Amino acid sequence: MSDVKKVFRIFQYFIPFFLSIPFVMVPIEDFLSEYPFFRIFPWYYCWRGAFVSLLMWLTIGAIYSLNESISDRFLWGSLASFLIYHYLSLVVISTQGYSVVLYPLFYTISTEIHGTQSIFQTLYVDTGQLLLLLTILFSDRSRNKIKNLIIKSKNLR
Image 1 (cartoon, rainbow, N blue to C red):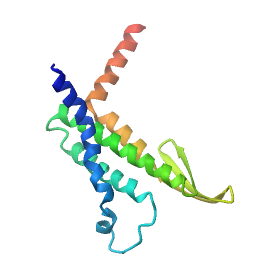
Image 2: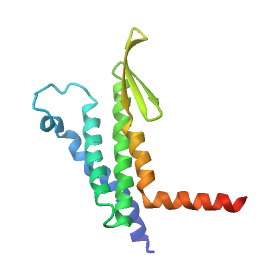
Image 3: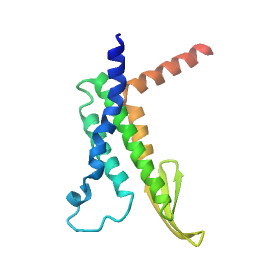
Image 4: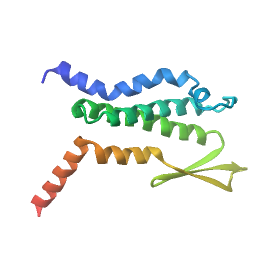
């Protein structure tokens, strides 16, 4: 395989992230809500990128059966883009006086009052972890790697 093809294959992983960057500045929430509100929270920018990346992940997942080799790279790229924006939004939220605690498949957000956490915590499904598990389960590349690891472990016995 030529070097140009290798570079292009690697670049395909980054295309979803590059496509989502312009949408960070578009107020997508205005199109999703009929109620006007002020965008004073700095995590809106990260949320927009995560939302667009999630839409790309869903779209690519829906057309996955058409061309698995190309769409597999886009699927993993859109997942990576979503994970970057999603966890960056949690970091931004934690710098705004909230406490974010990650658990397997969940996370909580609570306010900190004078250095102590409040008793009011909100539990959220961690879509980053959920999408990662779904991508691992449905991606042909990861399924093949898991099968190879199982076969190798059986041969070692």
